[in-house]
Image 1 (cartoon, rainbow, N blue to C red):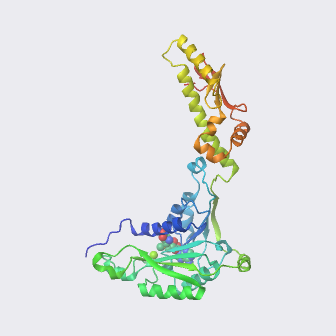
Image 2: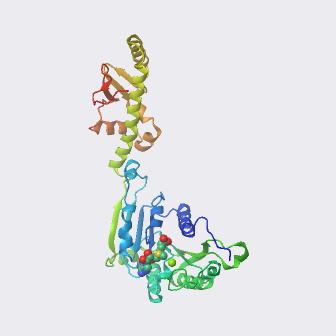
Image 3: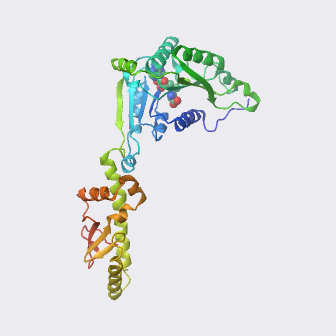
Amino acid sequence: MESVVFTPRLFQQRYNFVVSYIDKYKPKKVADLGCSECSLLRRLKFCDCIEELVGLDIDKSLLMEKTESLKPLIIDYLEPLKTRLTVCLYHGSVTEKDPALLDFDLITCIELIEHLIEDDLGKLRDTLFGFMTPHTVIISTPNSEFNVLLPNLTGFRHYDHKFEWTKKEFQDWATKVATCYNYSVDFTGVGDPPAHAKDVGFCSQIGIFTRNYTESEDSLKQKKAFKSVYKTVLNVVYPSLHDEKYLRQAVLNKALSFAFNKKRELLHRLFPREEDDSTNIENHKKSEASNENDKHLEPFLQGNTVHIPIEMLFHIPKVKELCGSLDILKKMIREDDSVCSDNNSVLYRVDLENDYDITGVPCW
Ligand SMILES: C[S@@+](CC[C@H](N)C(=O)[O-])C[C@H]1O[C@@H](n2cnc3c(N)ncnc32)[C@H](O)[C@@H]1O
Ligand SMILES: [Mg+2]
């Protein structure tokens, strides 16, 4: 038989499906049940709208192995997120009720349900739709009708699967669940069948459940009083521009690296290395003359100090966007001990005779 090749690979198509859903509906609180090696969570970390991202799995060793990959990297500190983001991993079972998973906008179960014995599937149904009650649930599971197209497959697709359902079996189960817990459900899937076997349907079938009612504050409050049973494996808050410390750092990184380059450019212009002294002095004079007119927007040299006007730094689009007003930028610069400044300029003292500035860094 002609083998079926998925491009992108099937698991990636499942993740892409979730990411597209998130891009469209912008949920803020998202949880992935049976998150396994956290591959989906690592992708969801980059969805701007998500403020709280949670993974739950019963396999603690898998979670422990992957905690590092969900912690902020150096780049996350250098380029803080615009939104807040907290990432939590819990060790626990989808059959247990814990307030940590209440009040979510979206909960995904990607290739999870087929790993549960009948009794646990019943408990998941009750926990997910009767206790967690997120606004939306996305469940994916193998479509057993597709199996005839998978070469060399005997039995189930994975040794741990407890069942694999036809389209009708999944849709019957999902429709019953939806009716029972007051959700609506739509069906789709990923992994297109080949043209000659369209009837088998998608390789992975997907149900999207949407809650039909608004949860009352009272009901939520009662459930929040439940005892916690999940064990926290990871709880990290990503650096975000909502945090004054990271906002200040992001503004100063941008503004001061720009100021430093402007200082170098100015000194290059005024004192080209190949030039003789008389040209240097002429350049210097010209520069001082022109700067009288627009000192607030052009760097200039006065005595042995380079002035980089703060107003000029404020016109860097990113700096303007981040700090909003010139006064705030001035305050941030004034309060940073590592920067020498007066109220109008960032100042660099330079040792013109030796081509070095006072910090020992070559001037140009
Ligand atoms: C096939 S893997 C899921 C893969 C993952 N969702 C993905 O798409 O990359 C099934 C996962 O469900 C987890 N699991 C099985 N029973 C569970 C339960 N009762 N509670 C939580 N997780 C469970 C397993 O440990 C495993 O990591
Ligand atoms: Mg599976």
